[in-house]
Amino acid sequence: MLKRLLTVVALVATMTTSAFADITLVVPQKPGSGTTVWTEIVAKQLEPFLGEKINIKLIPGARDIPGVNKWHNEMRDMDDHFMVTHGGNGVSFLADKVDYNYAEYESIGLMNLNIIAAHRTDADKNKPSFSSGSGMVPEAFAMTLLICGPDKSMDEYIACFKDNVNWVKGMKGSERRLAFKRGELSGTRENPAAFKKHAQPTIDAGDAELWFHHGILDAANARHNDDPNYPGYQLEILFEQKWGVAPSGEFYNAYVLVKSFRDGLQKAIWAAKGNPNAEKLRVALTKMSQDPDATAAIAKKVGNYEWLIGGAGDQQRDTLMTFITEDALKNLVRFNVEALDLKAIYKPNLLD
Image (cartoon, rainbow, N blue to C red; front, side, top):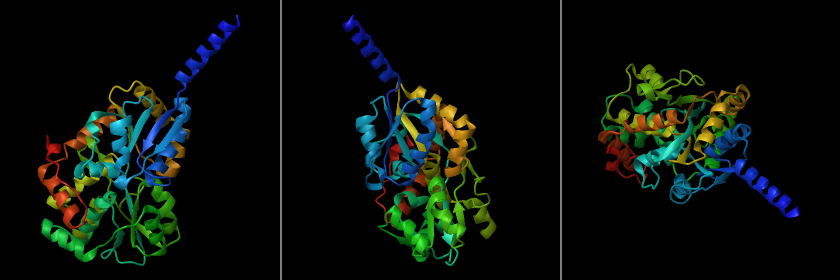
């Protein structure tokens, strides 16, 4: 009798563990970084709908590439491990040597986000000082467009950037935020969650103001729409207000490519194809995204942005791949190398 009882207890314990096994979200950053903060916010709201504990595993590294590579090579076949990628990973996918490939995964869901830039009120927007970094590439393009105007060649835009932008190298995230607050940098940029936490207080104190944002990707129509959280500050709107024409041309096309991958895949959760727990996680994410209390809690810290879950996330990725053209990709790499001094490479395989 005792043996049977112990067997039943062990069986129940096994069933309970299987039904409520923890899952792990792998984040390619260190504590306090933008994607880490976003993942913590979302995981807290998602756990009650999943009915399981969500662990967050941080794997930081140069340009946030090692963590995604490690998941791709060593963890993606672990049914309880899911990858969180951010905009810098999208930029690296276009112009860095990486192991990961979005086409090999299925979307759990992504938040269709934006990046917002602020500028010190006591500084000249035509002569900004800005912290460099691979994730900052769209901001470098945007600043160049606003400062230099329309109808220029790639050579002219590169020269204009070098003449007018102080592209400060070697700063970590915490350092650039403090430097902006002190006025040592005139510009900064953040994802929505980090913007509210780090940049908005400086704006509220009257020491800074909104500068620009890149818009919200409308993949179905291959365009970007104004961000309702920060209306009127989209790059295209500001450019036309300043220069009297809409932005266009080869430099602008490269900007659209890189900002689309950076922001369109800015905060995304991925599974290996065929992961048996993927649908369970998608169902929980769908319920969370439809719950008014959960969405209000996320919006308070991040902003009100749309969730694209499952097939909608896959469609977003597939649409982004159609934005890659030979000219846009080559010009992106050229600006990275010649203007930003980044070790970018041309990847013709992305055109296949």
